[in-house]
Length: 180
Image (cartoon, rainbow, N blue to C red; front, side):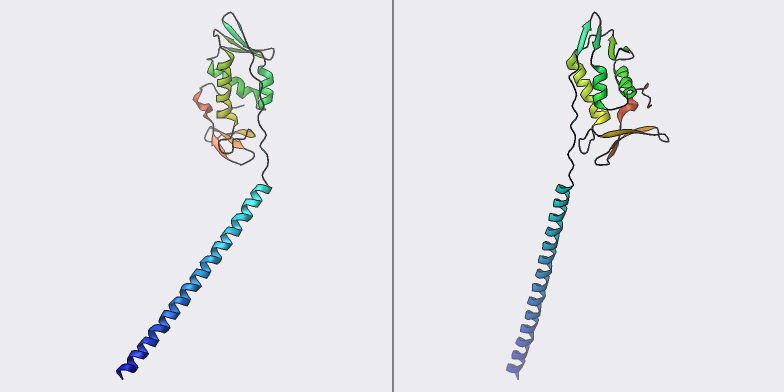
């Protein structure tokens, strides 16, 4: 009987091992199916993104032309650059007048900076800073944005038309900055 008991215990252990192997195979098959479904879904998402990808229009701006006369600087193509930026000109005017501490006049579509000699390279860097803060989306780097003021919390938001991202604008650092 001892031999029969040994054979029966071997048979039962063999059956449990076979069951465990089939369970492991089933789990592996399920995992493989999940991987295949995941890869198919990922391929579909990538193809949809490539299909619906819209080209971002680049912001083309002329180089600022600055003429220095005595102790004042005249930005000659100021109005054309404001038109190329496609923003409210009051926002741009307020930004630059706040930068130059109210020594700014706008006459004949030119920006006149009184009391300072400002080179065109300095105006280029200020213009780039303005565009980075006020116009260009921080998420998708698009220039297709709107400035929106929340009247309740008194903050100005930059809202992208392409990716719908919003972020606050650092316009409040100038005390004289008013949103039109």
